[in-house]
Structures are given as structure tokens and as C-alpha cells.
Length: 316
Image (cartoon, rainbow, N blue to C red):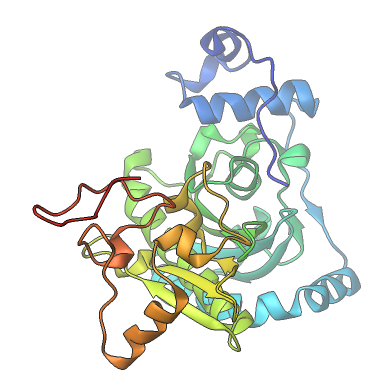
């Protein structure tokens, strides 16, 4: 379950920040301020307290990795690929489960400074334990984000700059988090933006690989993402009756909160029958009644205008 900000936030978060974080510079993004607020009032943490890293014992790490064997088998391939690109630039790459416990970690050549900062397998970055941080706050917010230097709740974690993206399963549930962290970054937060994009891309690749393995015996539909964005393809798994069994994150985001994908008939979502979609594999083309290619009419109700002179075509 994704944690949400408390229902009763201060009417002026800037006043809260000024009271508790006067030395942190200009007002942070609202997402950061909300996490600071949770850290103080929900978790009872003190930002001046030195970080006390919660670390699993060796036997606990082994059991924890065995528990997540299937997830690790796929996700670690993505971790390895991301680490090959980011370790030489001084970034540690971590994979966590949905509780913020690190399952895999790939560190740059000089391991010690990263390990001393808790960037190791078996460390726990849950927001309730260490306050605002990349993994914990990424899981709590359920969205990609950057936690840069003194945006971390505990001042002792201010050496870190973290770019994170949550990972979701085909039912839309949170699986864990992919994270890239560097130490003592001297640049502004904006300098981490490209790192965040790369982390987010690999998170989508991990999700899609997991999706394809899970539904290897089902009908799978691949719908193109935005033009020029191959990393944002939409995937649906459909049973023999045309009911949607699972969807990747891009599909859930495109559908939005107003549409329930799981269990829905694919024809209600795409306005094209399963038989018509299967015909695509034989070289046919599925066209929506409005005249557009079927995959462009994504929502459950077509809102495209009918083509000029097309009798019997109406907007829903």
C-alpha cells in the first residue's frame, strides 16, 4: 500500500519548514515538505539526530533474498545494466523491496564511503525509520523523484543525492524501488535530472520484463507509447474471453483513475474486439469506428470526432 501524506497538513507548509528546517535554504518542493512533515509528526523523528542505519544480519539477508527470488531474478539484470552505465560516474545503484529493504546493490570501485552511508544490501530505508530519503520517500509518494543533499530529513544523510523510481507489478501494486545515489554532489538538484530519467527508464524495462515472464502463456498486447518514446510502451495481458488480466505501469497511467483495467473487457477499453486484435498478427489493421488506428483510441469511451462523411459513426 502506498503511504499518503497526513490528511491534515498545516495550511502553510512554509511556516512548518521555517520552524523546523530554518537552516535548509529556500523552501523545498511540496512533496519534500510533506515528507518532512510526516517524518516529524507521524514518525516522531528528529532531523538533527545522526542516521542510525538499520541493517539486516547475514542470515536475514539470505532469507529476504530467497523470499524475493523471482523478483530479483529479473530485476537484478536491470540493476546490472544501470550500474554499468552509472558506477563509472560515481553512482551506487540499489534495488529495494516495497518496505525499503535493499535487495541488491552495485557500488563504484571504492566501496567504503558508500557502504558507510548505508548503501549496501540489507539496509532499510523506510521513511518511518530514517525520514525523507530517496527509496523511502519514492515508495511513499509512488512516483519518480530526486532527493538532493539537504532535502534528506536527517542532516547526516545530506551527503547523498538520490534519483529513484518505484517499481509496480501487473496488478498495479508496489514491488519496490530502483535507486541511483552519489556522494557529495557539488552541483544543483537539476544536474541529477538525466540520472532520474535513466533510472526511470530501467525501472520500466524491469517492470515490462517481469510482465512478459508472468504472462508468457497469455495473449499479450503491446501498444505503442508516445511518438519517439520506446521506453513507454503499454502492455496488456488478456485471457481467452478478452478480459484484461494485467497491465504494465504505462497502461495504468494512460487509463487514469477513472478507468478500471483489471477484469475489464478489452473491447470496452480499446473499442476493438479480441478477434480484431488477433487479426493484427496476420497483417490486418484494426481501425476504430472513428477512423483512427485502434491503439490511439485508448480510453474506454472514444472521444475522437468521427471522420468526415462517415455514416453511422457517433461519439460516445
